[in-house]
Image: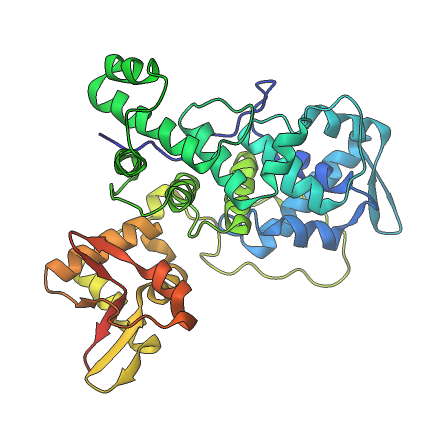
Length: 377
C-alpha cells in the first residue's frame, strides 16, 4: 500500500491554473491601504525564498510591478501602490468572488489565498471558519489530497474513519469498502481505524490519537516540517507561488524602483533545481548528524544527548542540498542507528518543560521510541 504523493499543483473551483507572481502581488496590493514596494518584498518574499536569491526576488517584484502598471491594474502615488478598479475586479475573479473587497492582508492571505490553494469556496462561512483553526486546515489538506468531499472540514474521528476506508480500498479493492459503507455503523474500532489510516503515511505507523494522525498527514502531504498552522499555511502559499518565474529577471526588464545600490547576487545563491539535490550516503549523513548533535547535546561527558528535533532543524539549515523532508530524515536516522553509524536513545524520564521537544523528536520503531542522538566525546 503506497502513500499518496504530495499535494498536486493548486487548483481552484473554476479550474484556473496556478497564479503567477503578478497575481499574488495584485492580491496583496488590493488589500486595505494598498502596499509599498518594501511591503510587497517583505510580505511575499518568504514564498520565494527557497527559489530566488534576495536580489533576484527584488528584480522579479520590480518586473511584475512594471507589468501591472502597464496593464492599468495598479496605480502608484508617492511610493504606495493601490489596485485600480480593473485590478480589484481581476483579484475578485481570481479568488472566485463576484465583487471586489479591500480586506486586511492577514485575512486575504490566511483565508482567501489558502482557500485558493486548496480549491475550496471561501464564500462559505463554515469553510472560512475551518481555515482559521489548525485542525480545520489540517483536515481540509488531507481531504483534498485523498479526494474526499470538501463541503466542510471533517472532524478528526470522521476523517479517520474515511481514511481507513481509503486504506482498505487500496489494499483490497472497492468490494471491501462498499461493504463497510453499507453498514449503519462502522465495523472498525477507533484504534483499528487509526492503524489502517496510518498505512497512508509515507512511513506507515500507528499514531495514538486521531488529531495527531491528521496533523502528521497534513504536514507530510504539504512537505511542511511541522504541523503548526503557520507552517502549513506557508507550505500552501509556496505551492500557489510555484508558477512564478524562477530565473533571474534581465536588468532591462527590471528597472529599480528604490534608491540606493542594488545588492549583489552571491554566486550559487539562485534556486535549487531537482537536479541540484544531492542525497548523502549513510556515512556522510551520519557524520553530519553527529556534528550537529555535538553542538546541541546536553548532559555530562560520556553521556551527552541531543534532541532529534533540534538536530533535524540544524540539518535542514546546514544541508539544504540534501533535499530531505523530516520524514526522510528520521527514516535515514533510524537506518544509521541500525547500521551502527550512530546511537539513538529514548527518554527515561519525561520533563514537562521539554514535552514539545520530546513529541517532535519521537521516532517509533517496533516497541521502542527514540528521542535523542547520543554523543560520545
